Length: 447
Image (cartoon, rainbow, N blue to C red; front, side, top):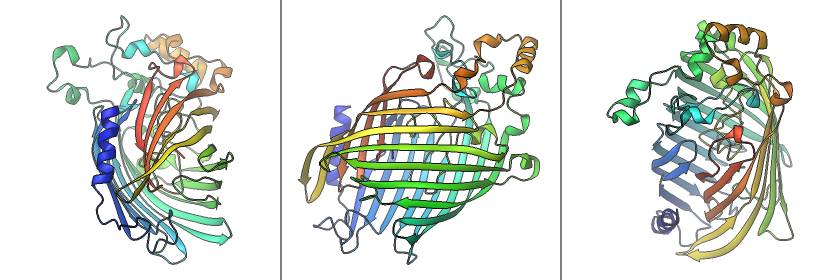
């Protein structure tokens, strides 16, 4: 890890293309090999670039335009191809967000519905365990393409209205075992058995219509309040939103029209100095009407596509240290808290850097569960020779029990906006993961 961080620092300073001697003006390009690590996705390799335009520098550290491009793949068969554009001045008086992202995922995580109502059997995925079934047991194939265009207009002071449109294309199926086994030694080949995805189909928890390809246009709109001191690393202020998202569906998938409501509140509080910031985020996503296919319950709606992935509870974008998508439900609540401390600031080659740490605690819980009929499941699992007690805990208190994790992070930032993040996290309940130490190497703060 030390050598990785050192190499990244060298790249930070060496690839200063189009940057002005005074980095507060003009164009500034940060280029990196997209070498990252996610406890859920594995090692990532590829390339990324972020081009900022600061104009005459009067708004620094804010920028007028940002163009971000990334192409990468991970050792756990997860891909990322993304092009993102943001502008404060292309449309006078409006902020413009445009994004196109393709995320192929041969081994997407799925442990079931409603958090702790689903029992996670970690030994079934460990090939050194006597109970080993397959490391793909809690996986399924989910390829997603998303494109979106969003605008924001100021109403008064820090209050804005937001509207946007987008389009999803999904391809969903069981894990392609034959493809993953190609070229592998016999000892590393995956057994061709039913995983949790296959079992949920047999038990009627996933409809046959929720497999294959499907497309979903959507529209959303709402209000945002933004008094943050800056965008990438605020030292004070509040960011809050409330919005509705309507997702349409057609043809054989027409039953999956749905309306969702989201609300988020983030605050950044300086503890006597801008070098020490307490930051927290509270959020919720609720299904107001309609039905959502299970693979879209993994999506967390947002008015601005600032990241490639906005997933439901669990993983690097929500609950660090907890399995990706561990909590899948119709509605949930989320809390993230961080103490952000700058421990060193310095300049290299006319670029401003700082190194910081951020201990954190994350928590989330189900507040709107997916309907899982206990008696029906008990009767169905009898016909499939499955022990229902190995898969479900039907105690209602389990559904609403919070999932909590914690850890600490390291931040290396250039010019306040290009921020390398290395987070270490662990779970507080063994039902949420089987790894006590989870590392995430990403770009930017979580929120």
